[in-house]
Image (cartoon, rainbow over the protein chains, first blue to last red):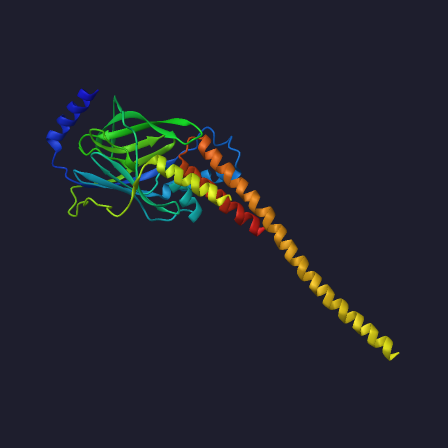
Length: 235
Length: 81
């Protein structure tokens, strides 16, 4: 599979290495899932349904160059403020995501604190011999898992990515990437990021950002912070 | 007769003051009871929403905000009622 990755990358990169930067707009679709109906909390069910209704109003942007990318939510409005917020939360988006060839970080800036959260997304992709045309680009399928260990259990959420070797940058929505092409469509369990618009080789390309004054933490540290806030608010 | 009238007026005046004071105390007691009822109910809603999110494979981050949203909606509902 690693050989296949290299062959695909070289085949397309040799012809299309002139793509130096770009800007992709993604739409969001949140589907219902098995387990929502059986949830105990009526507020959770109601708010998740509002997230489903309002997902279409969220617009995500991925800007990239050959070294790094930034993925963020464009400010907008939903049917109501609550629905827009619920869609944002349940999309899995935690804050602006910075990727380079080695690391992925989300800039968390809310009541939990302000941090650069080092994220682990899918590491081991399986490349599938399936293609589809997305926005005029030939894309290939890859499948993987997104593992969440939340203290209640360890969950292996299925991931399907459609990457396009014609855009030889290994980035994608919400910190996913490390494929031999840009991810134009990504599904994580019941959450789907689909491409709306592709702009390449912009006159004003994305410039890599540095967040030097922000502390970096990992997932286990942010989970401890959340547990601490939960305990404090209940005392 | 004058004494009787005066006594009657004094009784009425005294009773009025006493009732006003009682009403004020009752008002305080009612408010305190309302706070005790609302907070545990919405805390429970928060906990249930968080647990539901976690049981369905959400991250702690997502579950925390799902719980916070449930608490906020619960407080809004109860304040309207």
